[in-house]
Structures are given as C-alpha cells and as structure tokens.
Image (cartoon, rainbow, N blue to C red):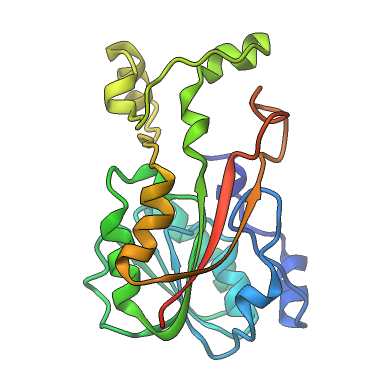
Length: 243
C-alpha cells in the first residue's frame, strides 16, 4: 500500500488552501467531484467511508465539516490522523468494515464520501443499505467504483505486451479467478483481495436500498498503466440522494 497515490497524505499547502476555502476532492483518479455534488459542507456531519489515507478526510475537516473517517485499515486511519494533527484539525477515526456501520445511529450523517473501495468487498448490497440507514433525509452518498468490464482482461499480459486478452468471466473474484500460486503471492504480499461488481449491483443496488441516483460521471486511470485505458473509462462515480 505504501507508495500508492491513495495512501499518500496531501501536502501541507493543500490543507492551507482548503482552510481558505480553496479545495477539491476525488472519488476517482482524475476528475474532481463537481461542486454541486458537495454543496456547502461547513458544519456537515460527514462520513468518509473506506476513504483513509490522509487525503479526503483532512480536506473536508479543513473545509469546516465534522468528519468521521471509517476504514478497515489502521494504517490508512493513522495517515488521516497524522494530517489532522499537523494542522490542528478535528477528525474522528474509527476502524471497521464498510458493510457494517452499526457503530452509528440512524440518520446521523449529512454526506457520505465513498471513493473507489468497494472493489475490496465481496458483497456490496450491505454497504448501500447501511449508507442509506445512517444518512439523514435529504443527505447524499457520493461513490466511486470500478467499471466491471475492467476485470475481463489479463492486465499483466496487457502491461507487458499492450495486447488485451479477455481471460476472466464476470463476476471476477481473486479467490476464484487467480491460480493457487497467484493467490498465495497476493496474500503473502498483504495485498487486499479484489472483486468485480455488476453495474446492476453498483447502481441498481443503490436504488434498491432506497436511493435516487441524481448524477453520474465516468473517469479513467491517471496514467497508461493499463492497456485498456485508450479504449474506455474504467471508473464511475455516482451521486445518490436519500429522499
């Protein structure tokens, strides 16, 4: 995880600018979240869900939100706290499973910010249900996620040769799709297991939980590390409202 862009805390000048009201956040690698999706977050009760790493949570705190960062990784949470302490910002950090928000009361958050992370969850329906429960009426869930088509391809082969080969049936799961040796190597390297999720589960799952999808955009990787990049966007982001 070290060295990953999602695990690299923001520079001090980024927080200083946010304290002055100049800030942007990312749900996906490149496109910044449209300002109408966020509104005025000052004094919002805001949940950064599986969003640790010293980036979004400190930015929201600098913008005046009352931030809770809830993540399964103690290392990612420590980075949020590091940036918060550096700038004397208040953030509540809590460790836990994104599919289990039982630590929170019903209708206690104005906004949930959930960047690309449900790729690490084997079942995303509990996540959507829990997000709906803990949001206040009129609150928003902002989510980033992978296009499931990404998981069709052998990306190791693609990176080495530039050739795209369809290799895996969907839904993809590291547990079922990797060889035993590949899976052992991934576990030994302490890399999180990944799972694809259909658009029906990603978008339809939110509406089934009770949300109204208010907007959507697509995005791509921030570099050419996948041979798929020139052909299609590999990320999506949605804004869902609890009416």
